[in-house]
Image 1: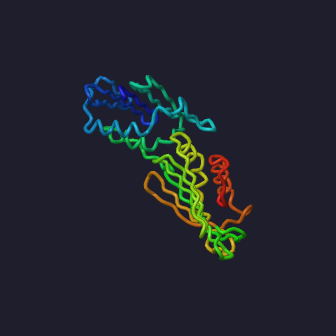
Image 2: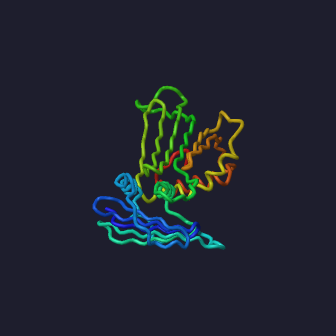
Image 3: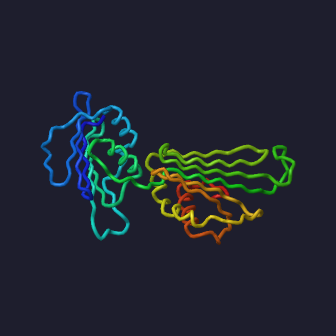
Length: 260
């Protein structure tokens, strides 16, 4: 259970102090050069706030978050907290953030006096592929028709930290693969967000009935949604799609379908 927490952002500048005492959550917020001598206040619905904080799994955050390219101007953020189970942790970042950062910002904004801009973070990806495959026949388990309808679905969900891939063949049934990882699912979304954000400019206007069709939908943390469709054209696909799919291939390992 959380005992105390301090969060600072140089960009604003802002300092938030939290203290759990006698089953109540106390807070103090200071801005700029203000001193931290003001009396700490009780946060209403503090127990509920703490339950939401637990779901963010701060213990899984790395000690440091740095962008791949060093920024010209630094905007550091620091988080220090003490938990009765894991002890003391200190984390620092410079314009790079953990996977649950957007939800953390939302939670901090519930504290009076805190106003941090929301992050347009990718929350969910949905891909649905429609195709037909030849029926090779030869066993009692296969249907009689020569062409079999194939539907593949891939769902990546940050909140539930799961990746689910299903493959349904008409008349045969459905195979299902699920990956559950508090660390790796947000990391995957973080690594594919830039490519996914460029999908909207690449939607197909004319579908090809002889090639697989993919419907895609993106849900962002700020509430916006993007959707469209692609015709899978192999090497002719846009680079952002290739990079996007390659990252998913790295995540799923030996699990493969027509999507990836």
